Length: 130
Length: 130
Length: 130
Length: 130
Image (cartoon, rainbow over all chains, first blue to last red; front, side):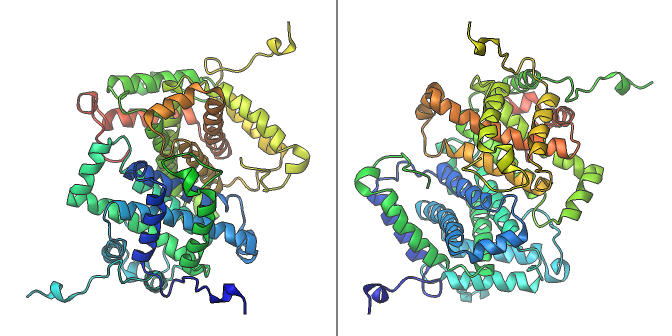
């Protein structure tokens, strides 16, 4: 039995948003980064990391993108960029006392109204801005 | 006592990533949106919603941004955009079998190496790309 | 003959970058906007307007996008977003004494080296970052 | 006299948009890139390059950003990213028969109405979306 087998990696089934926020908080406070982490620069962080995620798919065909998710090194690169977006989103929530789950629930209720099932089914139309 | 008092709103302390992913999945499948939700377009979604979040802070001073978080209607607008980014990130994870918490943990281990406390403390320098 | 027929609209064949920069400068100075137009916020402007441009194509198929360019109202919407990106790019250049044409020429020389014809022909591979 | 002195570098005062578009067209056609350059992927290009430009200013103070424009190597890095945004914007215009100067002029007329001088002077308020 190897040591690694004993380490319980977190997974989506058991990890709460609060635990992720706490981890981000500890990481940034250990580095004294509060001074840089105003909302504007954190939103820049969310946006530029989202751009790096998107950049991976630029000029790629659907077939090439499927293959990217099957190649473990490229899959890891994609997941790293997704994690970077999540990092800045969590940090922005943590620094500004935003409860992400509550905000998400409230927005989903709005989305239910904006995209009623009978109208939105099988359609890529926007009813107003998402 | 009003009906609303009986509804338990989700919060970050108790909500897992898996629960949020499941909610996104149900929402999109009810609308038959799998056909549109390839990885490239979902990454576009993450990026354009991140742009809408950032847009709220364009040309705003630190003082104005602080006031935005204290005005409940503007705070809600900010939180809505954060929720939109989260929506597409969760959907991308769910559609492509990405465990976000595991990906996040692995990336944080890389970040610990990339930004060692003794070098990164109080610094906004990048050691390579984030 | 109507008045509009007498107005010579600018076109790409005769319009220089300097003329566009001058127009942006006059527009912003008339509104006393220099105080807001620091490089960070102008780069936010370039990025968020680019996001609005991209947003028009989200979840759209190649066939739908072709049709968008043939529908004059949608074509105008696309062109408006392209103009918004150009606006902030020109303003950023003008405020910071950047000669865009010179910068472009220098970057194209780098691109020639990064994407040599014999290697880049018919390939969507990146040789380093674009 | 050195050879370099004989080369006339283009500058904004004399370079037209059409000349830049022609240069981008030649570059891309020599590499047989038309097959990749659909409007969606070119808009991704505009957006991700805008993200790289913005990324340079993340967490930087106004003083640090001023210093970046005075350091010739960093200034060149900024200008390179601006050139990359321009590249994809020109390519998108060229591939889709968009006259950028005409589109810009038409949008500026809309901007004049959206931001009338008397209301917009010294204000960072948005009257609708830019």
